[in-house]
Length: 635
Image 1 (cartoon, rainbow, N blue to C red):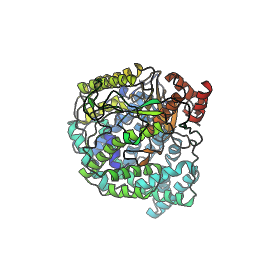
Image 2 (cartoon, one colour):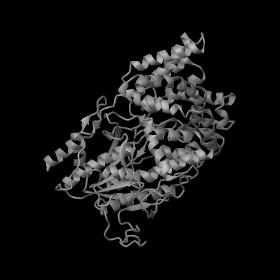
Image 3 (tube, helix red, strand yellow):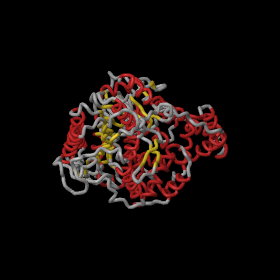
């Protein structure tokens, strides 16, 4: 992603530092420390700053003061709290590593780096952790005193040796991505991004800024001072290593697991609801649920159910009231749809390590953006993502199943170039009631499966309240976030538990965190008819982004999954948003074959046919072909 997106996310992240993962931190004595079970248990830190973030990141006494205060808080928290979440603890360590670089403290970098590596969940990423700093220290020790040329020679030689010892098939896509990302690491872009993104947040925060914004400032300073330097030192070594070896294409485990239903199969139509951002219904002729009591296009609620023109499904506007329209609106879009869609595909190439011509086009475009143009571009990309998301999900949910009958439930998630809307209790209560209405509608429509590839966390509400200046007092802000979140989450849970004959399928999330620790809805909810799905790649290994948790046992393909977007073009997207509908798809096929199956039976059969994920005890990879065999045998 463009670096400015990264620092915006850091500034308004739904966490004290970064959201977490599932493993307990090693070496923690829980009886000596205060347990941190969810993000809500973490302490809130605020900082008084005497300059705008765009000035602070240039360095000087004011930044040094902020960094010293953050260092003291981060260190004290690690000593005081038993943070029972590996990725959250890792995030603390990452910030301390950045501080180590800024203070030229090699011992701190090594110590915190080793601790962070022990907590990393993604094996290929873990292999690569620390090798650049190791090469830097080796170059500094053996060549630094001789001169720059000797330093770079020793650095490159050491780094290359580290890479040669690692399995090529597991790390080459990561290295390709890093090389491509280095092209857009530019000081002027970072300075401009902070000015247009973090400065306004600091103004809204008033006298004190919270830790998320402070960490955005720290990360930006680190990248300016050390991150760019390290990336540009490593990139030529990565490029040479990639060029010297033969690319190894990873085996795709999903080809042999695929199972489709033939139109001639003895089966029953099954209603699959896609609770998302809308569907381009014109692409799914013959696969749509139809409300025969409604007349299309007459602007009348013919059947008196509270929804106008709900011939194929329902929609809610930005205020969570019933509206019409199949797709998430693009009224505020300023860019060209085709170009933005092209850039969306390019961003997936970039994340996947595919150095395509469209990646170069995207990077050149990003490099040319400044000020508000950059903010507008990110806003446009987010709008288009919402516009296309539901259709892409629906295509996955219905693939290979002529008996699927799609029912869209369109949400209009709020998107702003910069956060200005202050969440209110009335709004979130209305949102909870809308969720209950969705449940009732789906029951009346005889839906059997509902895909929910979205998530909302309580800490995100707290972060938005901080970013918008909605509640300046930290304790009151925390309490208000609970009130708003509970009003909404209660509605979603009611929609699920009051619909025992419907299977609800949730995407775990794309933040590499623990769905319980981060208080996610619906991913962190518990119900016998709810299953939460994580994402793996083509080899069946966890993606770098997938969230997980105690209730996330089933994993499906969520890496560069092909499907349609509005208008009919096919593109590849990645995310647990793409993994969840793989399970919804499988459930739809199972119920088409045997409509008598209950949600609990569907989950049990999918689990029985699933295979263990190598190296990850307790996690299972779905196996659609074997699952359908079990269903037919049972029937």
